[in-house]
Image 1 (cartoon, rainbow, N blue to C red):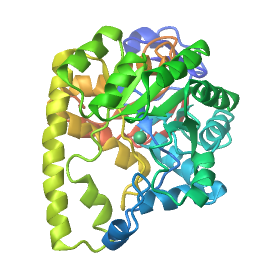
Image 2 (cartoon, rainbow, N blue to C red):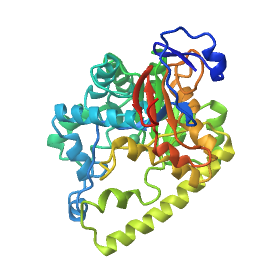
Image 3 (tube, protein in one colour):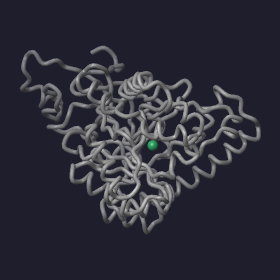
Length: 404
Ligand SMILES: [Zn+2]
């Protein structure tokens, strides 16, 4: 392969490409490694670093969706949060994630500023599609917070949808921050008219709309309002999957909590009672069964899907990139063919982002965002947890494949 500046210029057998190289071309020999396009995490939260608090705190100080760990992560100093976001971005890149779609919880402008800083070469990180503030309804995140404080937190983290005019206004406010995508958290309070106002306004500005929709009602609202992607989609029925396929709506799968993830992030740092541990194991088993079933129905339905880590947790002993890459094996274990798992974080993801002309494939004209693994990721998808070589924008970020 020949790379010119930050783009792939030519792909072919080494002899063919080498036959017409200029004398000063730098050669990188990756030996028998498997080369892939840079990985795309299509749902992440670089600016959240949630530490699950002890049980009593969770039980006695719970504020609905603002569980104590989430609340503490959100009310950090914005500067500290941005620096932690920059660390997560660098760690993602070092694990081969060369593009992320960051879907909310970045404060007012953390993600757009980090995106610009990375693009300007000030800090290392993946290409970022930034959503800015997440659009929510009044009933969603803030309902259990102290009203005297709720509005301040709301202003920092969210834009409120309350009627179609406010919905359009919220999209425009994000446009003012120069976002790349609009993120909406749908719940039963969100009407089709409100969400349609969002998608119309966003599409007018050529922005795609990603809708958090775990339950049947929200999923239907997202379908009817012509969202571009549905995030999570846990309760999608076969009929809804068919509608999504027919309308070209992507499903972003996030099997984050399958496979004992909760205990992995809690047990190293807090004491868990035997009863609570047993409940977690049981919950995990049911969640995995349900999600694996969903994944199998998704594969059968023909709906286009991508994979998102939804990573927003501090994972003891792992970098953010390592924690995020662990999600892939869960899809394989749920019955997705390894090549389709790879497509879900490369070609399919690029298409969902609207970036199919710039990344997601090893093809002439695409950005030189590449990763290499020592073995065969089709035979063993966990190879992608051990990316040995990373290039972004034509620059080598990491090369552990030996000196060449
Ligand atoms: Zn999320």
